[in-house]
Amino acid sequence: MNSRVHILIYWLLFLGTSVSAQCPDRNFFLKRMNYLRDSSKISSQDQIAILLPYVDSLNACSEKNDSIHAQLFRRIGALYYHQTDYIKALDYYGKYVNIVAENEGNPSVNIKILPGGYYWLSVIYDSLRMINEKWKALDNCARMAERTGVIDRSNLYALYSRMIYFIDIGDFYRCIDYAMRCETLGRNYAKANEGLEHTAGLEYMLASSLVKAQVLLITGDYVAAENILASKIDECKRVGAIGYLGIVYEQLAKLQKQKGNFEKAHYFLKNALKSYEKEKSAVSCKRVLKIIGSDIFISKNLFYGKLQPLMMGYIEEATLFGAAPKVTNVQVRNYLDQFLIEEGSQEEFLRKNGRLFKAGGKVIHITSY
Image (cartoon, rainbow, N blue to C red; front, side, top):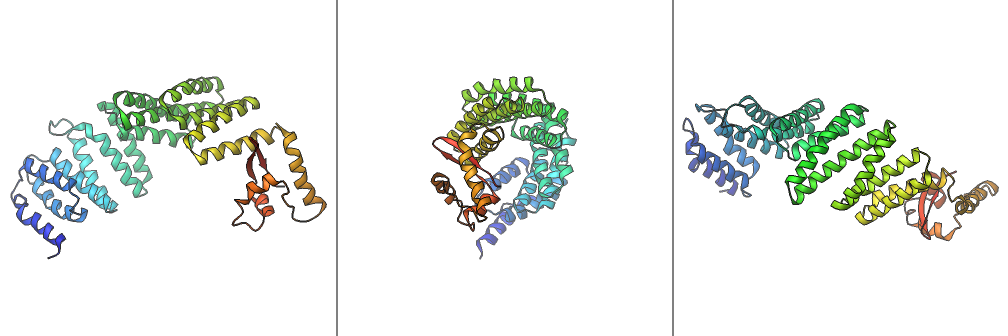
């Protein structure tokens, strides 16, 4: 007999005798459900087949709509989600959340699990592309967490997501509100935990601070933005948040650029580059190099004397000889060669993209003409 069928029959006939009774023994059922959850030998499909008969059985109990009933719906909903059957996952997980929300005064229902329930409901809504319902679930997650005093990753994520949403749509007032709430809870969560959870709290706290500073930069409150950013340098160094330190330096550079102080902006960008190099973040390093090359070196003619011979050589070949110009500078050509595998020529690549390169510790940006 197929082993999967054998397991299923075993559970339904030999361990499932209480299903046919009017109300199963609650402690025994809870242990059984936990065993299924922790078992690696029983597939999600088989677990659903085992658990579904208990829905009607528990509905017949005099004490229904309690934590056992809620956990059954949550487990079935999670199993359907694992199978990517999001419609059924939403049905059962929604019932789980409703039982908990509607029985707040019931001593057998733990209301503090509700924020996590709303979070997972938002995940299911997101999978179904039900965006308005997703945001409503995240708002409920944050609201219930604050009301019950729960701080965990679910409500930190809810606050963070709303913060990012509101800065994206330009609603800076609500963005700041969510950022302040997320920053406070992130700090408290870090203080209350160790290891990975401590780190997670710090990351939410720092990310919220940086978003606040970004809003202040956008709205022109440079003094307040600079105060926030300057205060985060030592904090990032103290907790070892090297990546966030790079972001702080980038934002300080942006602030200095907007104030017209390009030399100081260049100083902060170099510090940002050092942070990203320590973090080994190639994407961030490339972004900062591009800013240094295009915004600092070229746009304000800083160190232009080092660029002019290269630029003029490129322009002269294109204009005087009327042919595709060749890159004659050996350092430039050696740098560009690695990017030209799929390109028809160096010239085509230059015209289409432009490129940064470092030579002798200096950054040069080649633009297209």
